Amino acid sequence: MQALSVVFHPLLLPTIMFFVIFRYVPQAFRPLADENVPYILLALSTTTLIIPVLSLLALRLTSTIKSLQMHDKNDRLVPFVFITSFYGVTTYMFYSKLTLNPVLVLLMLTTTLLIVLLTGITFFWKISIHSAGIGGVVGFILALVHIFPGSELLIPFVAAIVVLGWVMTARLVLQAHSFSQVAAGAALGGGFCYLMMMVFS
Image 1: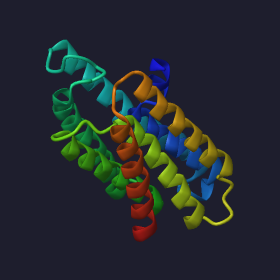
Image 2: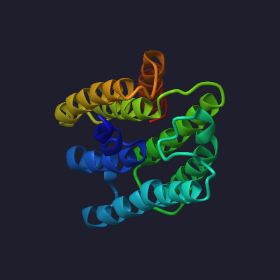
Image 3: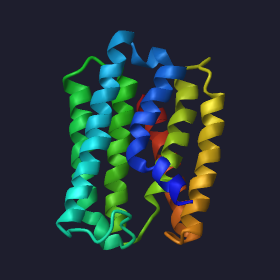
């Protein structure tokens, strides 16, 4: 169960989501040339995965947080501020420095805003970030089905729902969250990401 939480860690999800889009909805990357997509994925994984992970390790080594799992909601505040900053910079870079499809920019902006929401909620309640992340992937894929009619997203959509069930179960078995915390995370992530994409795309 712990392995599921690691494999589908929220910091991995932007890179996975963009890879799925490139694989199943390549038109979403236009006007970017296909040969440039790997560079975008590398930049994305650097700013949304590698740098945040290194920051978390630094916070742990300096005892700013007690555990990388951040079981205590008070441990989440400083890391979330850092992560929000990194994702915000990535969104700005996508918007102003790169020639990307507006849908991808909106997807990244939505992800950043979701983190801001989760950070705010974390001040009061330990909502499940894992569930919100996978729920967000489900919401994004469902929105992309409408934005790009004819795209073959059935397999990723079903896979995302299955993974969401696995992750929610894992968080409960590990006693990392209550049922209300994982359910609220999934509902917030899925609903927010779907609505943002549908309203603003």
